[in-house]
Length: 336
Image (cartoon, rainbow, N blue to C red; front, side, top):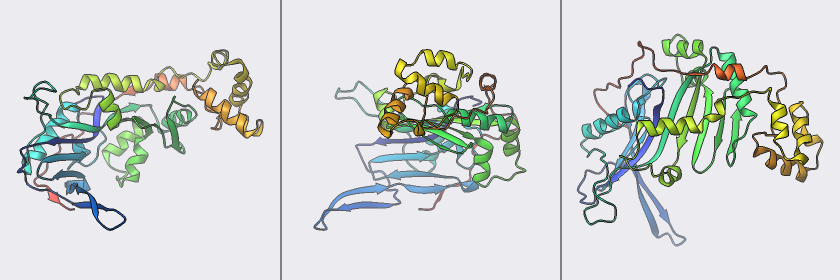
Protein backbone atom coordinates (compact mmCIF):
# COMPACT_ATOMS: atom_id res chain seq x y z
CA UNK A 1 0.00 0.00 0.00
CA UNK A 2 2.89 2.37 0.79
CA UNK A 3 3.92 3.15 -2.78
CA UNK A 4 5.94 6.16 -3.93
CA UNK A 5 3.93 6.07 -7.16
CA UNK A 6 0.17 5.89 -6.68
CA UNK A 7 -3.13 6.28 -8.54
CA UNK A 8 -5.24 9.43 -8.31
CA UNK A 9 -7.94 8.80 -10.94
CA UNK A 10 -9.38 5.90 -12.90
CA UNK A 11 -11.99 5.82 -15.65
CA UNK A 12 -12.88 2.28 -16.73
CA UNK A 13 -15.80 0.26 -18.06
CA UNK A 14 -16.75 -3.31 -18.93
CA UNK A 15 -19.39 -4.63 -21.32
CA UNK A 16 -21.50 -7.60 -20.23
CA UNK A 17 -23.13 -8.78 -23.46
CA UNK A 18 -25.67 -11.00 -21.67
CA UNK A 19 -27.28 -7.86 -20.21
CA UNK A 20 -29.87 -7.97 -17.47
CA UNK A 21 -27.91 -5.80 -15.07
CA UNK A 22 -29.63 -3.20 -12.86
CA UNK A 23 -29.95 0.25 -14.44
CA UNK A 24 -27.91 2.91 -12.67
CA UNK A 25 -28.21 6.34 -14.21
CA UNK A 26 -27.81 10.02 -13.42
CA UNK A 27 -29.88 10.94 -16.47
CA UNK A 28 -29.83 10.46 -20.22
CA UNK A 29 -28.09 12.72 -22.73
CA UNK A 30 -30.13 13.02 -25.94
CA UNK A 31 -28.98 14.76 -29.13
CA UNK A 32 -31.54 15.87 -31.73
CA UNK A 33 -31.14 16.69 -35.40
CA UNK A 34 -32.47 19.85 -37.08
CA UNK A 35 -35.98 18.37 -37.33
CA UNK A 36 -36.14 17.56 -33.64
CA UNK A 37 -35.67 13.82 -34.13
CA UNK A 38 -33.49 12.16 -31.45
CA UNK A 39 -30.37 10.74 -33.08
CA UNK A 40 -28.20 9.82 -30.12
CA UNK A 41 -28.81 8.77 -26.54
CA UNK A 42 -26.25 8.17 -23.85
CA UNK A 43 -26.75 7.04 -20.29
CA UNK A 44 -25.09 9.38 -17.79
CA UNK A 45 -23.32 7.89 -14.79
CA UNK A 46 -24.80 8.38 -11.34
CA UNK A 47 -22.87 10.26 -8.68
CA UNK A 48 -22.21 8.57 -5.34
CA UNK A 49 -21.08 10.47 -2.28
CA UNK A 50 -18.99 9.20 0.60
CA UNK A 51 -17.74 10.92 3.72
CA UNK A 52 -15.64 14.10 3.54
CA UNK A 53 -17.61 15.22 0.46
CA UNK A 54 -15.83 12.65 -1.69
CA UNK A 55 -17.56 11.49 -4.87
CA UNK A 56 -17.24 8.94 -7.64
CA UNK A 57 -19.40 8.27 -10.70
CA UNK A 58 -20.79 4.82 -11.44
CA UNK A 59 -23.09 3.93 -14.30
CA UNK A 60 -24.84 0.93 -15.80
CA UNK A 61 -27.23 0.84 -18.78
CA UNK A 62 -28.04 -2.82 -18.27
CA UNK A 63 -25.05 -4.00 -20.26
CA UNK A 64 -22.05 -1.74 -19.61
CA UNK A 65 -20.71 -0.92 -16.14
CA UNK A 66 -18.54 2.18 -15.76
CA UNK A 67 -16.59 3.81 -12.92
CA UNK A 68 -14.86 7.17 -12.94
CA UNK A 69 -13.17 9.11 -10.18
CA UNK A 70 -10.53 9.13 -7.49
CA UNK A 71 -11.51 5.80 -6.01
CA UNK A 72 -8.71 5.70 -3.44
CA UNK A 73 -9.78 9.11 -2.14
CA UNK A 74 -13.39 7.98 -1.67
CA UNK A 75 -14.51 8.37 1.98
CA UNK A 76 -11.08 9.60 3.01
CA UNK A 77 -10.27 13.04 4.36
CA UNK A 78 -7.76 13.87 1.61
CA UNK A 79 -5.61 12.31 -1.09
CA UNK A 80 -2.20 13.40 0.15
CA UNK A 81 -1.23 9.78 -0.54
CA UNK A 82 -3.22 7.10 -2.30
CA UNK A 83 -3.30 3.45 -3.36
CA UNK A 84 -1.05 1.71 -5.83
CA UNK A 85 -2.61 -0.01 -8.84
CA UNK A 86 -3.44 -3.36 -7.21
CA UNK A 87 -5.12 -1.77 -4.19
CA UNK A 88 -6.98 0.63 -6.48
CA UNK A 89 -8.44 -2.30 -8.40
CA UNK A 90 -9.52 -3.93 -5.15
CA UNK A 91 -11.19 -0.69 -4.01
CA UNK A 92 -13.13 -0.40 -7.28
CA UNK A 93 -14.37 -3.98 -7.15
CA UNK A 94 -15.34 -3.67 -3.49
CA UNK A 95 -17.56 -0.68 -4.33
CA UNK A 96 -19.10 -2.44 -7.35
CA UNK A 97 -19.89 -5.46 -5.19
CA UNK A 98 -21.48 -3.29 -2.50
CA UNK A 99 -23.97 -1.78 -4.97
CA UNK A 100 -24.80 -5.08 -6.62
CA UNK A 101 -22.87 -4.77 -9.89
CA UNK A 102 -20.38 -7.28 -11.35
CA UNK A 103 -16.73 -6.59 -10.63
CA UNK A 104 -14.19 -5.60 -13.27
CA UNK A 105 -12.23 -8.54 -14.66
CA UNK A 106 -9.44 -9.17 -17.15
CA UNK A 107 -10.09 -10.31 -20.72
CA UNK A 108 -10.37 -14.05 -21.26
CA UNK A 109 -9.18 -16.06 -24.24
CA UNK A 110 -7.46 -14.86 -27.38
CA UNK A 111 -8.75 -11.80 -29.20
CA UNK A 112 -10.39 -12.84 -32.45
CA UNK A 113 -11.34 -16.29 -31.20
CA UNK A 114 -14.94 -17.37 -30.62
CA UNK A 115 -14.26 -17.80 -26.90
CA UNK A 116 -12.74 -14.36 -26.40
CA UNK A 117 -14.45 -12.20 -23.80
CA UNK A 118 -13.38 -8.59 -23.38
CA UNK A 119 -12.65 -7.53 -19.83
CA UNK A 120 -12.56 -4.08 -18.28
CA UNK A 121 -11.09 -1.31 -20.44
CA UNK A 122 -9.31 1.66 -18.86
CA UNK A 123 -9.71 4.99 -20.67
CA UNK A 124 -8.00 7.30 -18.18
CA UNK A 125 -5.41 6.73 -15.48
CA UNK A 126 -3.67 9.38 -13.36
CA UNK A 127 -0.31 8.32 -11.89
CA UNK A 128 1.09 10.48 -9.10
CA UNK A 129 4.09 11.05 -6.83
CA UNK A 130 4.92 13.52 -4.03
CA UNK A 131 8.46 14.92 -4.02
CA UNK A 132 9.98 16.47 -0.91
CA UNK A 133 11.85 19.67 -1.78
CA UNK A 134 12.60 20.77 1.78
CA UNK A 135 10.53 23.95 1.83
CA UNK A 136 7.66 25.70 0.10
CA UNK A 137 10.05 28.32 -1.34
CA UNK A 138 12.16 25.66 -3.05
CA UNK A 139 9.02 23.97 -4.38
CA UNK A 140 7.91 27.30 -5.86
CA UNK A 141 11.36 27.81 -7.40
CA UNK A 142 10.99 24.40 -9.03
CA UNK A 143 7.60 25.38 -10.47
CA UNK A 144 9.03 28.67 -11.75
CA UNK A 145 11.88 26.89 -13.49
CA UNK A 146 9.65 24.23 -15.03
CA UNK A 147 7.39 26.99 -16.34
CA UNK A 148 10.35 28.30 -18.36
CA UNK A 149 10.88 24.92 -20.05
CA UNK A 150 9.00 23.18 -22.83
CA UNK A 151 8.31 19.62 -23.92
CA UNK A 152 8.19 18.61 -27.56
CA UNK A 153 4.67 18.38 -29.03
CA UNK A 154 3.03 19.45 -25.78
CA UNK A 155 1.21 22.67 -24.99
CA UNK A 156 2.17 24.41 -21.77
CA UNK A 157 0.26 26.36 -19.19
CA UNK A 158 0.95 27.63 -15.71
CA UNK A 159 -0.61 29.50 -12.81
CA UNK A 160 1.97 31.74 -11.19
CA UNK A 161 4.38 29.79 -9.01
CA UNK A 162 1.71 27.33 -7.85
CA UNK A 163 1.41 25.01 -10.84
CA UNK A 164 2.60 24.20 -14.35
CA UNK A 165 1.34 21.67 -16.89
CA UNK A 166 2.22 20.23 -20.28
CA UNK A 167 -0.47 18.50 -22.34
CA UNK A 168 -1.43 16.95 -25.66
CA UNK A 169 -4.09 14.50 -26.84
CA UNK A 170 -2.20 11.52 -25.37
CA UNK A 171 -1.24 12.63 -21.90
CA UNK A 172 -0.78 15.50 -19.48
CA UNK A 173 2.08 16.16 -17.07
CA UNK A 174 1.44 18.61 -14.24
CA UNK A 175 3.27 19.77 -11.15
CA UNK A 176 1.90 21.87 -8.33
CA UNK A 177 2.39 22.87 -4.70
CA UNK A 178 0.41 20.30 -2.74
CA UNK A 179 -0.04 22.45 0.40
CA UNK A 180 -1.55 25.29 -1.64
CA UNK A 181 -3.88 22.88 -3.44
CA UNK A 182 -5.06 21.44 -0.12
CA UNK A 183 -5.94 24.90 1.20
CA UNK A 184 -7.78 25.72 -2.03
CA UNK A 185 -9.95 22.64 -1.43
CA UNK A 186 -10.88 23.67 2.11
CA UNK A 187 -8.25 21.86 4.17
CA UNK A 188 -7.80 23.23 7.69
CA UNK A 189 -4.45 24.91 8.36
CA UNK A 190 -4.09 22.83 11.52
CA UNK A 191 -4.66 19.54 9.70
CA UNK A 192 -1.60 17.26 10.19
CA UNK A 193 -1.63 16.34 6.47
CA UNK A 194 -1.48 19.99 5.44
CA UNK A 195 1.27 20.78 7.95
CA UNK A 196 3.26 17.81 6.68
CA UNK A 197 2.88 18.91 3.04
CA UNK A 198 3.94 22.44 3.99
CA UNK A 199 6.94 21.41 6.09
CA UNK A 200 8.20 18.95 3.48
CA UNK A 201 7.66 21.41 0.65
CA UNK A 202 5.78 18.69 -1.23
CA UNK A 203 5.80 19.08 -4.99
CA UNK A 204 2.98 17.00 -6.45
CA UNK A 205 3.66 15.61 -9.92
CA UNK A 206 0.84 13.92 -11.84
CA UNK A 207 0.88 12.07 -15.13
CA UNK A 208 -2.57 11.79 -16.70
CA UNK A 209 -2.69 8.97 -19.24
CA UNK A 210 -5.53 9.55 -21.69
CA UNK A 211 -7.54 7.08 -23.75
CA UNK A 212 -5.41 7.48 -26.87
CA UNK A 213 -2.14 6.87 -25.01
CA UNK A 214 -3.45 3.82 -23.15
CA UNK A 215 -4.76 2.33 -26.39
CA UNK A 216 -1.58 3.06 -28.39
CA UNK A 217 0.64 1.59 -25.68
CA UNK A 218 -1.62 -1.46 -25.16
CA UNK A 219 -2.21 -0.50 -21.54
CA UNK A 220 -5.99 -0.23 -21.62
CA UNK A 221 -6.85 -3.78 -20.66
CA UNK A 222 -7.42 -4.43 -16.96
CA UNK A 223 -4.73 -7.12 -16.88
CA UNK A 224 -2.16 -5.33 -19.05
CA UNK A 225 -1.52 -2.62 -16.44
CA UNK A 226 0.92 -3.37 -13.63
CA UNK A 227 2.42 -1.27 -10.86
CA UNK A 228 5.88 -1.86 -12.35
CA UNK A 229 4.81 -0.62 -15.80
CA UNK A 230 3.26 2.49 -14.30
CA UNK A 231 6.34 3.27 -12.22
CA UNK A 232 8.68 2.88 -15.19
CA UNK A 233 6.43 5.01 -17.39
CA UNK A 234 6.16 7.69 -14.72
CA UNK A 235 9.92 7.98 -14.29
CA UNK A 236 10.45 8.12 -18.06
CA UNK A 237 7.82 10.83 -18.45
CA UNK A 238 9.15 12.97 -15.59
CA UNK A 239 12.78 13.09 -16.72
CA UNK A 240 12.30 16.87 -16.90
CA UNK A 241 12.72 16.84 -13.11
CA UNK A 242 16.16 15.26 -13.24
CA UNK A 243 19.57 16.75 -13.87
CA UNK A 244 18.34 20.31 -14.40
CA UNK A 245 21.19 22.78 -14.35
CA UNK A 246 20.74 26.42 -15.31
CA UNK A 247 24.51 26.82 -15.38
CA UNK A 248 24.81 24.60 -18.47
CA UNK A 249 23.83 27.41 -20.87
CA UNK A 250 27.10 27.21 -22.84
CA UNK A 251 26.51 23.57 -23.66
CA UNK A 252 22.93 24.35 -24.62
CA UNK A 253 23.98 27.18 -26.95
CA UNK A 254 26.54 25.03 -28.74
CA UNK A 255 23.88 22.42 -29.29
CA UNK A 256 21.51 24.84 -31.05
CA UNK A 257 21.21 25.66 -34.77
CA UNK A 258 23.72 28.42 -35.50
CA UNK A 259 21.10 30.98 -36.62
CA UNK A 260 19.15 30.53 -33.40
CA UNK A 261 22.02 30.88 -30.92
CA UNK A 262 21.97 34.66 -30.76
CA UNK A 263 18.27 34.67 -29.83
CA UNK A 264 18.76 31.94 -27.22
CA UNK A 265 21.69 33.88 -25.74
CA UNK A 266 19.62 37.06 -25.53
CA UNK A 267 16.78 35.17 -23.84
CA UNK A 268 19.14 33.53 -21.35
CA UNK A 269 20.42 37.02 -20.49
CA UNK A 270 16.88 38.08 -19.64
CA UNK A 271 15.93 40.04 -22.77
CA UNK A 272 12.40 40.05 -24.18
CA UNK A 273 12.91 38.53 -27.63
CA UNK A 274 9.52 39.78 -28.82
CA UNK A 275 10.94 43.31 -28.93
CA UNK A 276 13.90 42.25 -31.08
CA UNK A 277 12.24 40.31 -33.88
CA UNK A 278 9.37 40.66 -36.38
CA UNK A 279 6.39 38.59 -35.28
CA UNK A 280 6.78 35.85 -37.92
CA UNK A 281 10.50 35.48 -37.19
CA UNK A 282 9.82 35.38 -33.45
CA UNK A 283 7.38 32.49 -33.72
CA UNK A 284 9.60 30.64 -36.17
CA UNK A 285 12.53 30.86 -33.77
CA UNK A 286 10.29 29.97 -30.83
CA UNK A 287 9.30 26.76 -32.61
CA UNK A 288 12.93 25.87 -33.34
CA UNK A 289 14.16 26.57 -29.82
CA UNK A 290 11.24 24.77 -28.20
CA UNK A 291 12.53 21.55 -29.74
CA UNK A 292 15.69 22.10 -27.66
CA UNK A 293 13.88 22.77 -24.40
CA UNK A 294 14.04 26.58 -24.54
CA UNK A 295 10.83 28.58 -24.57
CA UNK A 296 11.48 32.20 -25.56
CA UNK A 297 7.75 32.96 -25.31
CA UNK A 298 8.23 32.87 -21.52
CA UNK A 299 10.16 35.50 -19.61
CA UNK A 300 13.54 34.33 -18.40
CA UNK A 301 13.96 34.57 -14.61
CA UNK A 302 17.62 35.62 -14.36
CA UNK A 303 17.38 36.16 -10.60
CA UNK A 304 16.75 32.52 -9.62
CA UNK A 305 19.72 30.77 -8.09
CA UNK A 306 21.00 27.47 -9.51
CA UNK A 307 18.23 24.90 -9.71
CA UNK A 308 20.47 21.86 -10.06
CA UNK A 309 21.08 21.50 -6.33
CA UNK A 310 17.39 21.85 -5.59
CA UNK A 311 16.35 19.26 -8.12
CA UNK A 312 18.99 16.77 -7.08
CA UNK A 313 17.50 17.04 -3.60
CA UNK A 314 14.01 16.09 -4.83
CA UNK A 315 13.07 12.81 -3.22
CA UNK A 316 9.96 10.71 -3.82
CA UNK A 317 8.14 10.21 -0.53
CA UNK A 318 5.88 7.56 0.91
CA UNK A 319 3.04 8.08 3.36
CA UNK A 320 4.20 8.57 6.97
CA UNK A 321 3.09 5.92 9.47
CA UNK A 322 0.41 8.15 11.00
CA UNK A 323 -1.30 8.80 7.65
CA UNK A 324 -4.66 7.03 7.27
CA UNK A 325 -5.01 5.35 3.86
CA UNK A 326 -7.97 3.04 4.39
CA UNK A 327 -11.18 4.32 2.81
CA UNK A 328 -13.79 3.11 5.28
CA UNK A 329 -17.45 3.80 4.58
CA UNK A 330 -20.70 2.49 5.98
CA UNK A 331 -22.85 3.17 2.94
CA UNK A 332 -22.88 4.71 -0.53
CA UNK A 333 -25.18 7.67 -1.03
CA UNK A 334 -26.64 8.19 -4.50
CA UNK A 335 -26.78 11.95 -5.03
CA UNK A 336 -27.38 12.40 -8.77
